[in-house]
Image 1: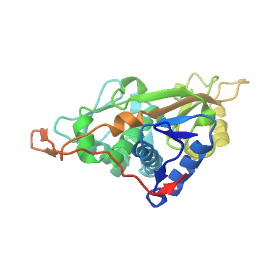
Image 2 (image 1 turned 180 degrees about the vertical axis):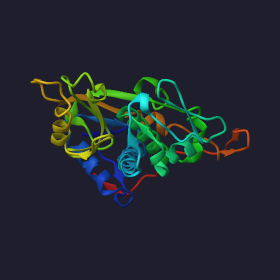
Image 3 (image 1 turned 90 degrees about the vertical axis):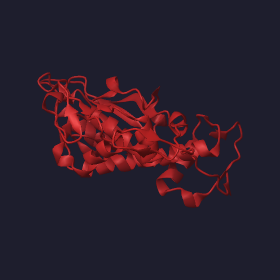
Image 4 (image 1 turned 120 degrees about the horizontal axis):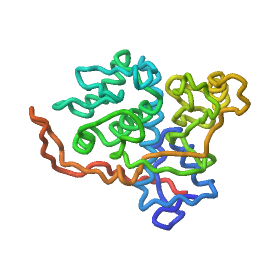
Length: 272
């Protein structure tokens, strides 16, 4: 069930929604879980961001980036500095939007693990949702590695895989992985559709296919199958919606001034 400011009746314009967004909307409305939103704007922002997460996952898959352990990670040194722990630090004077977009445009120059891929996908989705000006103002000094190092996306963790929706991040755990290949102890994935996921290093597959792929990476004589955990991770959509700038422009030193508010989407016309 969806409640907008406590009210089950609200208006939206279906012409502003993609087929995927309409499906997410319908599934949330039919859920036994009550989803609270302060406004229709907030709901629409989440739907748009989820769409961009799915699109970013597919774009990363098509970009030519390679899978690599932290020890073997690589990046475009024009925009990023590879750190000793295998992460990527955005170079001074480089706009965050430029650094993120380059991963998708010059994927052959990059290699990283699945956890890093998820963070990159989420940044790309936020960039495509809020625009360059907002992104560059609020996501400076980017450091890409894994969940442990991310703070500015304000990620939320839930534990109910049955309430996962496209754009959510889930985890397939491989409890008896081969100790010689710790990178296959599990797979971080983005949910693209019902029982369809993207996992960097595995590709776009069904849940069953991902489990089969992980099971091939188990230690000898293992008996416990890989499985999808209850863990569900997603950005704090309302926090991201609240980000605002004033028509940002940047000078040669990377400074900016700004005017105006961004991140607001208008009301529509169809009633539920």
